[in-house]
Amino acid sequence: MHIQSDDITHTISSCCLLGEGAYYWQVKNSLLWVDILGKALFCYSLENNKTSRYDMVEPICWVMETTKGQLIAGFEKAIYQLDTNTFERTLLFSLLNEPPENRLNDAKTDRNGFAYFGTMDKAEKKQQGALYRFGHGQAPTKVDDNYMISNGPAVSRCGKWLYSTDSAQRTVYRFSVDQLGQLTNKHIFITFSEDMGFPDGMTVDEEDCLWIAAWGGFGVYRFSAAGEKLQHIAVPVPQVTCVAFIGKWREQLAITTARVGLSKKQQQKYPQSGNVFIIKPGVRGLCETPVEI
Image (cartoon, rainbow, N blue to C red; front, side, top):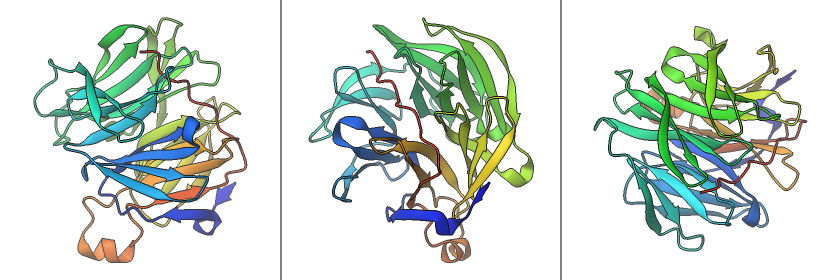
């Protein structure tokens, strides 16, 4: 099955430098996403189709709900709680041992309420990024390392597998994950070919298939639970960054994109770069588990 760009049901004009972190805010029936380099958080209401932008004092990399109905967000070097009305922030955790050239990147929870997030070298030159876990009273703990661009954690429907990407290596790894968030049995699960682009943000649908945004790949790929490539969803821009199922029934797929690094000629050729695209993929997604702080 191949979905074309004309299957896009809605486009949100956000013009992000680096749109990322798509997340369905269940309590508000809204889509949240960030512009990391633009230092902004966006909120799109599915009730009234209104989009709001909230400027931040530094790069914001991801946002998610907690079991207490709060929001937390990863910024360049730390994790903060966000006020759900004003989005003002309160410090929760600082990452004091990360290399100074690093920043936080993508994040996701497992089915037991642990959160996982990656870090990366901002210059995208050194393999000094890592994967961290926190939650259930635990501060962030490093659980894997040697990433250049740690990206797109996602968890299988059954909760027994965690997927993690090193975008620069075009590689998606799979781990076994237990109820305490311990990762074992790391192995290569999917490798992108050069013409597919670079794997970025990920999510899982109710059929346990993995959806992966393709940076430089003009769309999103869907893979089976066995790692078989099933589908490509085309979008009219090259740099696709993240995906999230949204809506009360998770029947829509939101796709974030970026325009950073595009030449003036490329920006003219792909003027919708940095926008968010929404499609109905014909399959529903899963509810993300709120993080248990």
